[in-house]
Image (cartoon, rainbow, N blue to C red; front, side):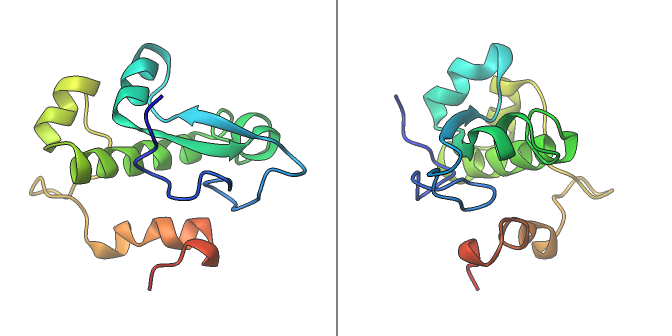
Length: 126
């Protein structure tokens, strides 16, 4: 089983930071279904609270398209930082998940900072 390239502390939920004592943590493969094994191979997985953040909560990745999209964007950024280029990512996963500007470049640093803001102060890197 490959280590996550997206998450340093696998003892906490990637989304809310909980330690799993009240809601056990589950692995979530960011690119699931037919890409689950590929996600595992490249470490594109995170730990999530089983009920609140993974399966049944209003913001849970399997119930909320915005959450799922956000994790896919972060997964692609992690792949590009660790494994290869955008073209290589698209060849493996079949598409680009990152928002682009009209000139084809990725949106600016304010967009990238969203992860730290979205996941709360525990993950703030400033």
